Image (cartoon, rainbow, N blue to C red; front, side, top):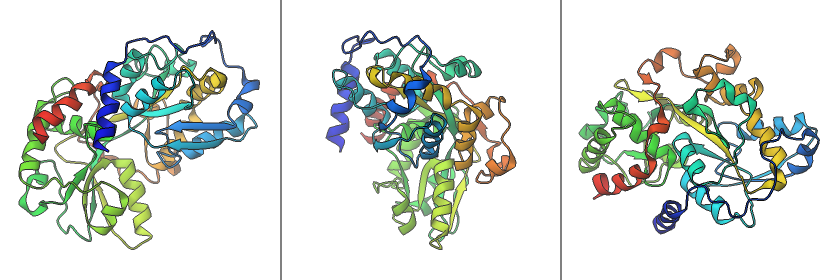
Length: 358
């Protein structure tokens, strides 16, 4: 796995900006032809956009139903960097239609030329840093949080500072920031909580180095299974993922608590990118990029437990029934909004290896 990721990242950094090979004369600037959407969406391969990720399964079905179509949605799990590399590598014979990315990777996808110069009208509802000149938009946000199996951890940590306590030795797991957008968001959150910013992540590397040297940071894979078994009973994950895991494990009589760290976290948006090279599905993709910012799609994200980007911006009122899975509003008092697209993700990849793992 480590070799595969290393090759992917090396390939990503080697890509030339705004590569034009493989693009056809398809008019990305034109409005989508709604009459073509159902046919183009019959077969829908995606990368890193799983049906159970923030309710994308329902979002895709709802969009297809609006156009009297059905979608055979099949996803291949990938990190944000791997998605960009794969889309570029397949440009002569495109496969993927769309991908979910950590929003930090939106500018990277645009610079590498894998997204089209198309911005949907609904993007006008977003702040400038939440969208590109084309091809990607923010969709929903999560807050890095602690997801704790309280059957195994009787005194759950309440802050980043708490995680350094000896009682949590070998218990803490997170995604690898050298390869995962989720892991990279955890770095940003830890940096801000420790006095840093989107442009100053140094406090996070110092913090995670202490966590590693204390033996608290585990090599056990972060997953619902390892959370359930207590192999990694404290996991640093998005709040909405923790909320979903809490509900699933409650059915197995496993108790889980989702905790926003009292010393700080950040709103970390996810984004949708569409494949510039998959022009055979261009109308579907333009329509879908528009749809994910509609009231209907935004509330489907909310239903899962993710906070719609438009709700964060104050542009969408979320009814109480759609907030049923959310944590209490008071829990989010320590969470800050930052322009996360200012984060240099390529630097995180290098610095994590050099400053934390070395």
